[in-house]
Length: 296
Image (cartoon, rainbow, N blue to C red; front, side, top):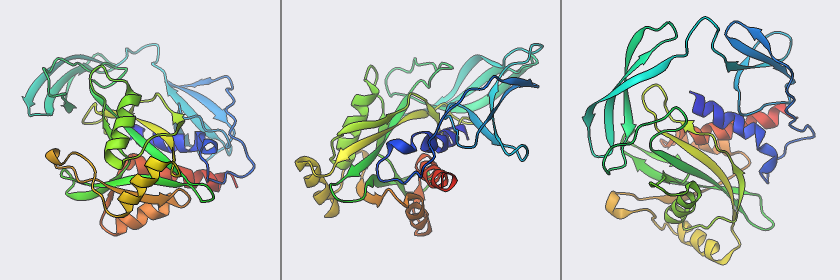
């Protein structure tokens, strides 16, 4: 699943930007050697300390190197492409579609998928560059003077999996709305916190499950000043069990403060307790831990 791989790679490439994480002495350089052709792929040999987030990573057990592959269409084949789309069924917020497409040999194929709807007149058509409707997730790093950094997560019940889920604050970007406006609003609504400054703003779309849906999101990593008066008050209310979210929509969101160091271990413990953990979040946490191991 490429969106999980993107989160994993992002953990490496932005590790030095996160306070409270020990990265050792090795810096993350990103050299760009000339590629050489291997079949329908372009292959790069890079040192193990380099991990650009824009490439798909495959480990090969030879030459003690990492290879990065970018898809390139071979000269004797056409690019696979969508030729049409038919709506099979609609609900309030989702629709089932049949997609007509051609493979690289020109053969006509069909595919079933689910797409989000805005609830307004459904005229949006997804483009190859971005989903028709997408969300933004926010990973808030709590910074308290004299203390190790923490991550502000949330818990809420997710009916499709029938469990309480540990995840980052998130929301759908409204029509004509700036992604950052959505992020700041959702963080306030779901945790009561206000953003201090941006740590990492990645423009990449993370496709949640590209085999069945075009639904995607962007992930922002932000700093939150836990000593600021309004944030401090929100954290105190959260510690007392205050419930956030829109009650009319069945939301019952609670804060969950977790140390940044050892985040993966804490998420695994929550899984053992019966919680579900959002895939993007867990992959990010795993990336942080693996990066520290590789850079020792």
